[in-house]
Image (cartoon, rainbow, N blue to C red; front, side, top):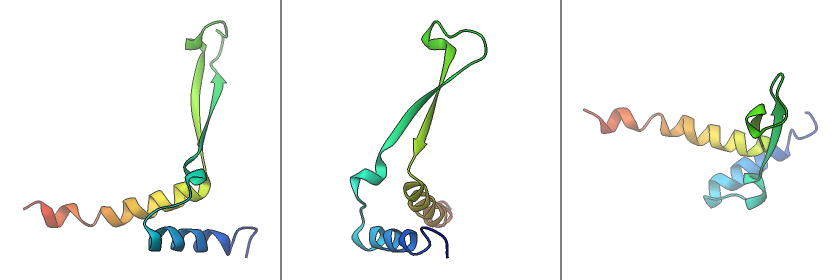
Length: 75
């Protein structure tokens, strides 16, 4: 397995069992990427959110499980 091959399933399963995850997994860094041309105003930059990979995995699992619920609620 790769570098985080064992840790990712362990953290994911722990978050599922406990119903929460460590607050540092929810940390997001914002990076400003310059747009072409104008760098002298805030409008000249684009914000990019750099989320934690494990957070993305856990949130994707939750979303995929929640997708199954709405059809049973809507008649």
